[in-house]
Image 1 (tube, chains in turn cyan, red):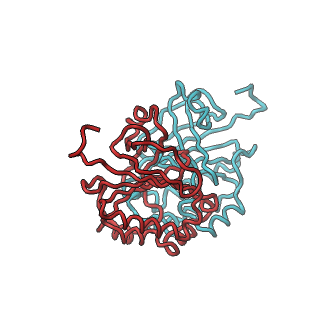
Image 2: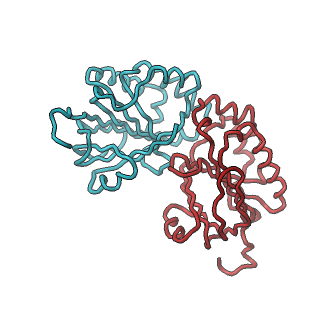
Image 3: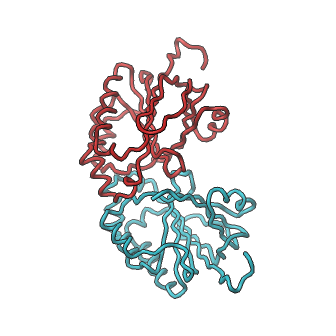
Length: 192
Length: 192
């Protein structure tokens, strides 16, 4: 439950090849060839000359109850599975109306109305995810969500994202960028 | 509801004179004469040669409900009141057991068992406060709470702090330092 600080650096380096960068709502991010996912100590070197860099930190669960956490823990798998060669990075910013809500109001919209936790659970274990918080780091996004899945679950991932975007919670999203990535098969590659 | 990033820098500069620094639980912080409370742009300059620097960022309310937020908003006053010449900075770190709890468990301990929000409300408006989050900034504390009050409310402040420290929530506090400060009367001083 310790905090993991991560920088996502888009440029010419990194283990992930960027397939496409799409602006879903609001301003896009610049196109780039590759994405490096690195810790804070490496970020400075990698970011030199990069197109953009987004920083985030994992944190404690803001909304999930004990029961939901236990249900998630029983089925979820970690990042870095060899077969999970597809990834998505989805940075999101919510509007000021969201941040002015009380905890009870945000929880009601997120779960009781939008079923955010329950929908994510339906796609476990194939679609692994990690949520990074960025708002209090002074970043231009509030959250960076990282997803990893095997190519055969690409359709399921599209369905997951589509369902969340139709939810009541997403009416508070004022900026969203969708970045799709592929991990090159290491058996076909030289050293990246 | 935007995020305010602040650095607390202890050394020889700043508008606040440090009266004492006390380790309540765990390791102390080094003694110093003055505390500067500055934005991120100024922090680098002020921090050169300082004893220590703590960074924090305000955020959205993690536990307070709409009703509680409305009640607080109706009575609280802002920071910077001329008569509020006393201040306290109380950095706190909670233990891993706290951070592993679900939102429902943390809310129950914080409010239904410990009455954290309700106790703070009893001391409004005399004792103004601002909570900064630090955990996801990679800091050695999780929270930095800043309090301001007039000298005639010093006893009330001691009572507030004492009641919170006796609460169930405080069993999760593994490090706490209590820093007391006084703003020198500007009519008696030269330029600080």
